[in-house]
Amino acid sequence: MKMTAFSCRKDEEELFAWFGKQYGIEVETTKALPSLENADLLKGCQAACVLTNPVDRALIDRWYEYGVRLISTRTVGYEHVDWRYAGERGVRVTNAAYTPNTVAEYTVMAILMTIRRMKIILNRYISQDFSLRGIRGRELGPMTVGVVGTGRIGERVIELLAAFGCRILAYDLYPKEEVRLLADYVSLDTIWKECDLITFHTPATEETYHMVNRQTLSQMKDGVVLINMARGSIIETKALIEGLETGKVGAAALDVVEDEGRIYYRDFKEGPTGNHDMAVLSAMPNVLMTPHTAFFTAEAVSDMVECALLSCARLLAGEEDPLQVNAALMKR
Image 1: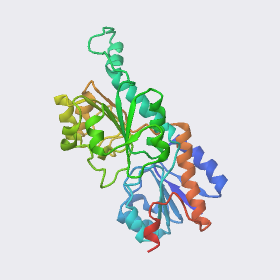
Image 2 (image 1 turned 90 degrees about the horizontal axis):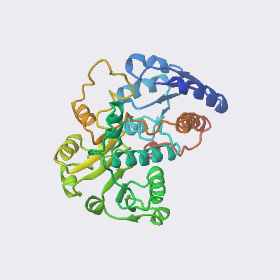
Image 3 (image 1 turned 135 degrees about the vertical axis):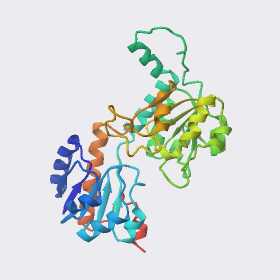
Image 4 (image 1 turned 180 degrees about the horizontal axis):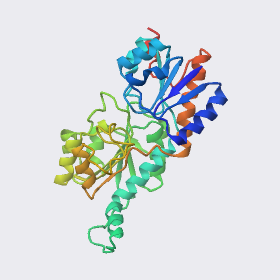
């Protein structure tokens, strides 16, 4: 079986070679992004591996003609792939499952940096301004923290936060008994009204699109701190900017933002990004922004590559794949 892996970084090449040998899969890697212009790279391949770049119907059709029966994304989120249409065509779509520690630890780091005003402190230090003016922070222990989404990552965030002694409220459509030992499940309305800080760990779905908007922000405490390490579409950017400008939102930490796909992982230091809202946010002293790097550890990258090769091996063996996101569509 042969796979072509797109958007492949140098640190991934060795992993693809290693796991390819382990699972008996021939892998071709390319730095190119998937497109109709380079669709010929899939000739003779049964699988394509992508990152966050869009894979639409036209591309799925072309790849299908070449024999592709598996599209594996090296990400937990899979909204950039038209997985429903792929299922209708008989093409498996799988995602990655990596250690929850990588994003959970990053989240706690971002929380602490935000409430301790670390962006201001570091920027001042560079210019040799060692004054204390305007940098008094807050302790996490006395705060009420809301965790929206208690999947593997959200659950691990709660475990880490519990050590600080803060009150933790949680929301998820599917509550877990293990989480109940450390947090109280409540409604979203309660999260909005009672939490000093809210961190999001949900996928990008129709239900979570602009979950944070003008209306929900109006329900939150004045000075609420918002942390988003999940998906940019969860927070309506313009509403967030308004909230920060009025003081309704006291601070924010964002590893993701709307319309980031055409910007993140590229170098714009010699020109504008073309995203005005992102420029506004990044200029704010109380907004900590990072370029979708919460996942980026040696352990997680290894897991992501291995998941793609595991999905190939399962397809080759005719086995069901727990990582497949469109299995129900293919059984119709």
